[in-house]
Amino acid sequence: MNLPVMLFTPIPPMETGLATYAVRVLEGTSHMVDWTVAYPEGGDPGSLPDGIRSVPISSLGEAGEIPRIRIFNIGNSLDCFPVLSALYRYGGTGILHETVLHHVLREGYEKAGMPAEYLRELQFCYGPSAEDIKSLFDRPGRTELEYDALLKTYPLIGRTLHNSTSVAVLNQFSLRRVSSAFAADRSMVIGHPLSALPELAAGSKPFGYTVLMAGGCHPGRNLEVVIKAVSKLREKVPDAGLLLLGGGYPAELPEWVTARGKLDEKDYQEWIRVADAAVDFRYPTCGETSGSLLEILRAGVPCICSDSGAYAYIPSEAVLRIPASAGSDGLAASLSYLHKVPETGRSISASGTSYANDVGSRERMLSDWGRLIEMADSSSRTDLQRSSDTSRMTLSAAWHPVPEGFERDLATQAVSWRFSGKALIEGSEGSSGAILTAWGRGTVNGKTLPAAPECIEISGSTLSFEGEGWVASVEWCSESRE
Image (tube, rainbow, N blue to C red; front, side, top):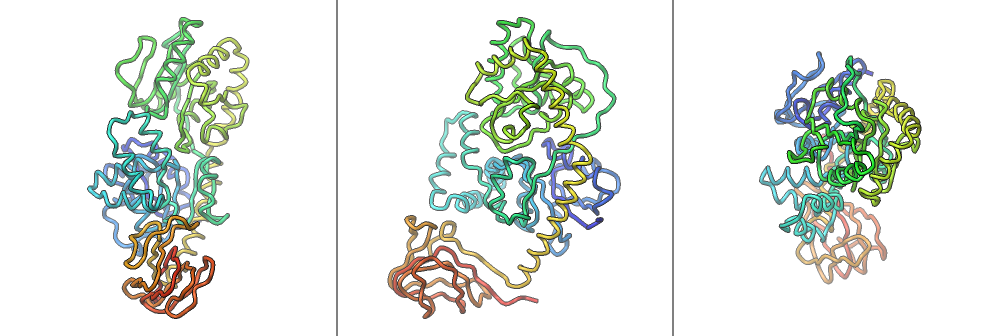
């Protein structure tokens, strides 16, 4: 293949898991792709495989100076904000590790001193409700769990999809969320590659029956629920305890809970393998695929997980899945069951290892990324052809301010601008016509409006309306600049 491709992504030592993911992909595919990596401030190009070109995102110029095929590695970490900003500027194929991006956009715009752009994101996705939604997030006194749930209620992913020519996700749950925004051949699922294991030594168990929770701590991990569940388990299994691997866990923990922090790869893998059982009880979901869960399954540790998001699509024989609503009581009962019936754990262990080895294999990565590059190549050619035909600026009645002479109408199926009498919409600079969705009882530039919503083409740099009607969108067009 050896096509020139630019990958926009966080890279080590940035703490997001997307940085590690990127290095794994680059290591495995450099023989078939001519990579250039565009990375945010804080990344170290010395962490990349030998021979990979790299450039800071901040030093990039116009889109014509970079490869036509552009892939953007996107998650909900603040480290991904420069990547998202670059997607908005250049366009390309998005790899969405999560389908909730509200946190990175809200925090990113706040840090950059760009509150108007945050409101613009809300307007794009939620139209006239944007101000009310913003006030929900601005309200003080909310707990971390309440704030996390609110973020997932309003995922704020619309502009990311709009600026992507095609999209890849890491699980079927996420595909169901985003595929309707694309043609059938413009979205796909890819695997989550795992690194080759280093040589491992046998570790000692911190507790007689060790329950593991691996990966960084955040509200969606429901640590308090897990601690309560293990506390209940200890009433029947007194030597049980909880082992936490990853960053962000609190300093104050019960004596039967030990947190090892963020570890290097060898120590991380060794600690995983001392566990008797594991839990990953995430909800509500961001649509994420958990790399730490795949590592647990690869290690052969039987795992109990919630039935939310991507976890609902893991084969039933590979995990012990319970409803998120079961809470600490249900989780404790499941842990007790695995302790009492070890043969069930052995069966789950074997199936889980098989599943993780398939999803994380080098063969799966090469196959998936081969198809991904082909999709990105095809969609970029289509987008290039479209952009060479006309220069466009689109107005949306749900997103943009209401032009003088109109009022916003929320009663129509698509949010619209309503006019009665005479009204004008001035075109963008250089415009020579427009494609608009409009209807009513009247005319636009002397052309009779259709009775029902319809796309119509109008010449001229100004749209002059008379009568009564509605406008849902306007796409201004100009002659090709070539």
